[in-house]
Image (cartoon, rainbow, N blue to C red; front, side, top):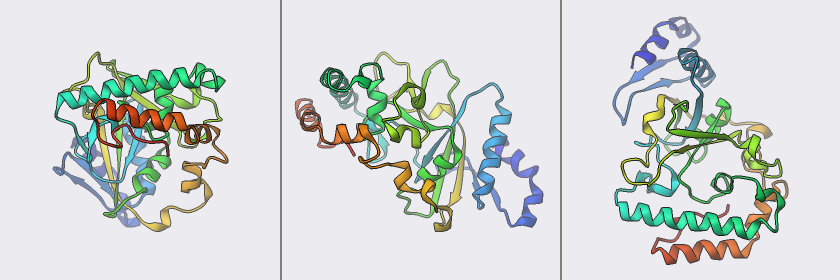
Length: 270
């Protein structure tokens, strides 16, 4: 709360420009409301300045979710509570990862060296990692995408913890996997030996959260469009390969059945 209050107190001059800043306590956790999206960058800079030795990255979300939980361990937006289900999903995912690597490494040369699970996370396969970006405007886009209640949220996470491994996908993956580059993609992965309901969330790494009103006039121009954030298969070669591989689709369905998971628990290429 002190972080938000200090920012608001030192920016009283913004009132003359019609900027409204409000600190909210509750509603899952404290956050700051900023009615002018231009000031989002100012607050992000303020947080980075307050944590000069930390690696602060962004995560845009279309709703104020109570937890930061990876897609593999999430059901209807909430963390899984049954450790048996968590383990079943993890085992199915791990087998999928290994089989996919074996299947593609002889067909697609760039998959021989790349971190397969980090790549697939961005193409619809559910995984135990979380997506981050280092571009505040991409985070704003994700906060607006699919938004229904008129308010987007941006989480700021400190990824300097020894509990995490952070990968810059632009450095590790070919630009033929275009989506990773247009999204300024990063991945954060917990260092754990065994997943359970006590360690599947990433809440402890959040240092701040922003709430802002979604307005249609914010999103305009090709570089701020879905066509840029999610290039289609005519531009993204990796998407083309994955989307048209019949074996991969069948493998996902087979593993969901083998581990008694629901359809869609492992995701799908999209």
